[in-house]
Structures are given as structure tokens and as C-alpha cells.
Length: 393
Image (tube, rainbow, N blue to C red; front, side, top):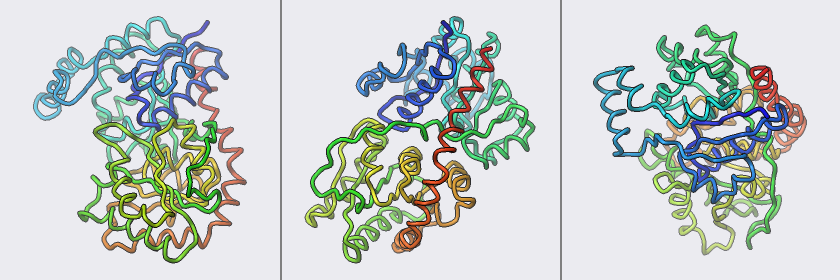
């Protein structure tokens, strides 16, 4: 049997990461028939989220770049001072990945945001070592900030045989940088994620509830201090005062150091006495999609929470901070204007409310648009599996 290794997976308590692994593994199995091994930084999270049923094996990665670990200090020192490939290769190469790769027909770097932040430099030594070892390499579902594509980063990405890029802004930038022969514009695999519908909590009105997701990540990217939460508060006040809709606060990442439930709980405490605001508890990505699919509309920060909404044909406004939000919305609607509100632009409390009102004024046409294109979009998301099958041979 053919074997494929997935690597660069941070852990399933980021339910976007969970969604990527579930869908990449399912597509891989369908298109190649290969057994899938997951090399993970957080196997305990994966087991807790039931990922045993999604992949054939889960293996602890030996190199976890946790804050204040020895590898973290090496990484920080090298990033700021030495810029030494030799130092990186000695201390930051993930040896477990290299060992597993020897037994595999191909390796898949799980894209998502991994090469969006700081160019993914923590992964470079392992990518180089895998290429040197002769592995067939595919980067799946990635976004890349165009401004990051200097010659060094471009050369690093050239180690991959195939770059499956999930939105056109990144794909165009990679092509312009000279990597067009390897670029495949293919929607994020999470557009194919299945939906599991659990019983709804009291107060959740199917088809007449606004879903809200806010994250510490977007708050950290705001340029006007306090603007993000002030805008979310104003939005909820508007919904409660001027509509008959309920509000569901939905987390999508629950890592201890980056937990959506923290800002969502603050919102819940402020509005719980209205009886129209519910806080959804943590659940797996398929169950969270089940809640999102029964919304009337969604205002989300986490990329894969918004993909869950888009793929369920729920009109969606993204509070974004990077190329991925703009690129995905542009590919779905022809433009990201009105569909993405950059958090860096938030200044006054009413700006999110104004964007929401535009969304609601166009909700029928947005829903019709998503309903019309989504079957083809899901089918195209499967094409990365064909690229992997061709790579394996």
C-alpha cells in the first residue's frame, strides 16, 4: 500500500487545523488509496478530537517549537542574529519527519497559514532536509503574503514539487515570482468538510440567528486599540435592538494561549441577560460546522469558521487581517469589497455594523450565489488529490 505523511500540523484544538487534516486525509485516501500518517506537534489534542478515525497513524513530532524551549531559543537567536542555515539544519530539523518520510511515497505540508506568518521560517530546515533526502513534496491549501516573496523565500518554496494554493491573490503572486509551473489554484480542502448537526442550545433560532466569531488573533492585529471589541459590542446591540434575530457566539480555536472563548465570553457576559445571545461550547470542526450551517448569516474572524459558513451557503462577513480572507472572498464573489472588513481599518464602533447591514441587505443574492457555485467549488477542492496521485505515480 502507498503511504503519505502529513506534517506541519499544530494540533486539533485549532479546529481549522483539524478541518484541514480531516479533509486532506479523506481526499488523499479517495484519490490515491494511500495510508496516511500524521506527524503532529500535539497528538493528545488530535486523539481528544477523534482524529484516530481520520488518519491511519498519529506520531509525535520530535521538534516542538514551544515558547522558551531550547529549539525556540535557537530559532529566535538565528532569526535575529546569525541567519545560519547550518545552525537551523542542526537544531531545527524535525528528525521524526525525516524518518517517517523514508517509508512514504510522498509528504504533504499542511498549508493553511503556516507560510503566511514570518514566511514559515521555522519549517524551512525540515523542508530542505526532506528535499535533500529525495522526498516527493506537496504543499496543500496554502496562502502566501505577496509582500513576503523575496528571492530567499521564493527559493525555499521551490523545494516543493507542487504548490496547491487556495486563493488567487497568493497564486498570482507565486506565479509572478517565477513558480508558476508548480502552482495549482485549488480551493481550500475544508470546503469539502462534512457537517454533523448536534441538538441546538436553547435560544438558538435555526435560520434566524447571527453567528459571531472573534479571535485574539484579530484583536492583536488591530491598529486602533479596543476597536475590535467595541465594534462587536455595537453590532450585537444593533442586532438585539433593530432585528428579531438571535446571536450565537461560536469559537473555532481553543488553544490556551490563543482561545476564542476569552473574547466571546466577555461578549456573552455583557448580553446574556437578554435571553437572545447563546455561547456555543467547544466542539469538533464538523460539529461546529453543524451549528454554523443553521445560521442565517455569519460574522467571523477565523478563516476556517468562515469556510464552514461559505460551504454551507451562509452569507458571511469576514473580519480579516491578511491575504487569505481577501483572496478567498475574491474568488467566491469576484471582489472582496463588502465581504471582508480588514481589522486594521476599524476605528469607530459603528463600522462593523455598517458592513453587516450591507450583508443583510444582499443576503438573498449572496445565498443564491453560494448555492450556485458551491458544488463546483467542492469538486475543484478535490483536485489537489489528483495532483498528489500524479506526484506519487
